[in-house]
Image 1 (cartoon, rainbow, N blue to C red):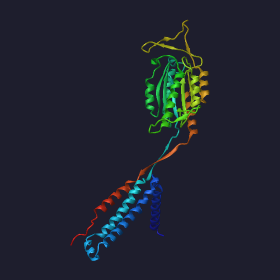
Image 2 (cartoon, one colour; image 1 turned 90 degrees about the horizontal axis):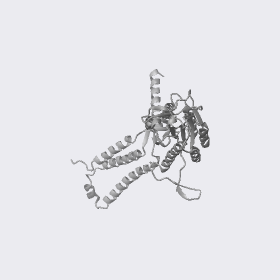
Image 3 (cartoon, helix red, strand yellow; image 1 turned 135 degrees about the vertical axis):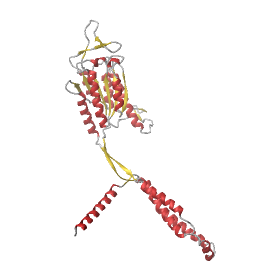
Image 4 (tube, rainbow, N blue to C red; image 1 turned 180 degrees about the horizontal axis):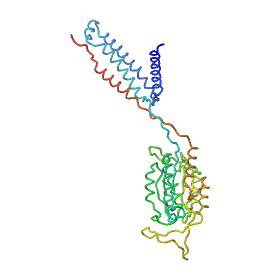
Length: 389
């Protein structure tokens, strides 16, 4: 065999493989509409039945010679071509409705599906400098890194900022809004003072419950389902979560106005884990005082003139985490506390379900619908009568 023949055979094999690959990539998106193909033989049968009925009708008119003269100008060939073209058009239209797809790209979609609420302490005690450069500045840096990682994972994140009261944003995938909200938060302007961990956890649970009810309502926003209580009465209750839900509490742990352990018990009943991050030192740091304009104005003292100290209440934070099946970590000067939390979150995500692969294919209906319309136009343009002499 000559080199030219070998090259020709190789080229033919390559073309054959390309064709086979193309057909392997072709898929039907609407297999539930395959029954529409029944319309093709029905359309052909309708044309055949109509032709027979015409012949019978002409035969019943009388003299065959006279009838032949009457229909002599009819273009029978055009009728046959119009029938064939119309049936082909119906076939192509049905195939177009099946949404034939080809090629395209495949992407890996993270399937973490976690709902996370960050409960961030912005009380005056967070201005203490026992953590460099200060508790609040260290916290802001940690949150920025955590939000970037959560955005890459595809988690939904909510935010609660608290001092003596709590406020925040519900869970969403828009990390930019959360960062903007945090930029505007300042411990020097948070009122009332204090550290209401219980109120913050209560609001965080509210955001997570709202996310559950929104998921139960479905994409059309229907009413939430009713779940039976222990007494057997059907009332609107909290639906189960479709994914794991987590609260990350970042604080020095010195609660002064609420009962966080009671809220932690409620969270445990809902299956919500609370991970606590202690920010500050165990030995303590004096609490700064600020004037009306937010400028430093000495330190806070008691009635006897003794400086009031702020320190991490590890016992409370550990109890909150233990109650809900979470964990506790202390922010130390040489490492980020949220790095450890991120590891826990990643492990929780992996245990939930694997990532999914989605294919974004090209729609091929245009290659079927356009010829179908052209064939329909051709069938209408065909002359029904022969041209005169």
